[in-house]
Amino acid sequence: MLPLLPMLLYNITTKIDHVAHAKWLQWMQHAYIPHLMDSNTIEDYHLCRLRGVDESDGVTYALLLRFSSRPAFDIYQEKYALDHQKMHDREFKGKYVSFPSLLDVVAHGD
Image 1 (tube, rainbow, N blue to C red):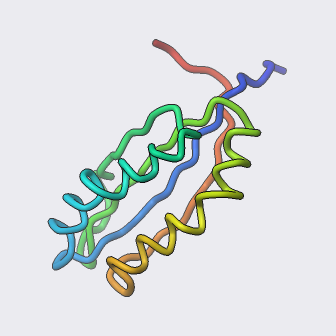
Image 2: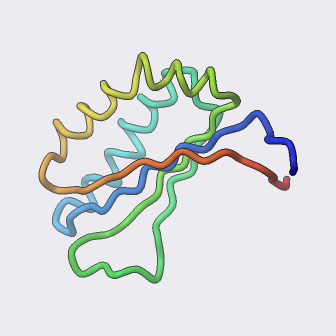
């Protein structure tokens, strides 16, 4: 068994309504993600558009947030995650569906 690296990825997959898509993408890049990064718990991020998926009812993105350790993620969850979720709901409630997943990084390349 390989030892786990002290790194976690928190993936938030979101499908945003076509009508709200352009506004949402701009808001993510200029308001939401900078606010996330202000928590100083996240090492870096990638905002990725999923390809090869059904887009008939919206466009799907994965926001990958990298944490250096489980304690850093726990601080994020305890102090910031609910506020960030509420922020998203205030702007786009009813126009998106979202689900999170937490991943342990077992290997990576540079």
